Image (cartoon, rainbow, N blue to C red; front, side, top):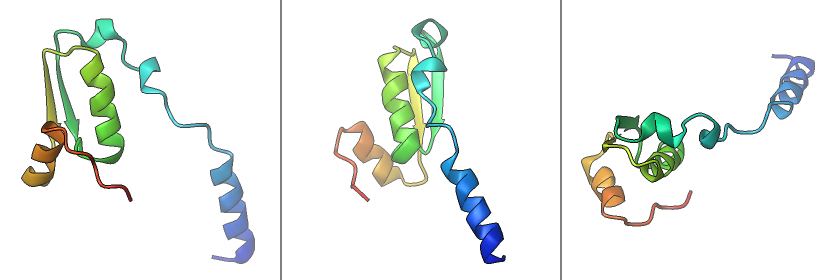
Length: 83
């Protein structure tokens, strides 16, 4: 990739809109009493989504994680490692 193309690519990345606010996507009336499944719920965006959906009172909140140990720690309320 030429330097000019790379600089052009960087400019487009910095012009991206801000992150999505989950509160605009899922309203309490859309979640309450339903089952919510979140993949990657033990860290990062998945964890943030899990926190948000938990506040909306789903009937059940299922967190899928590749690591049973890490998933269990989140469910038990242990703090996540900072990166």
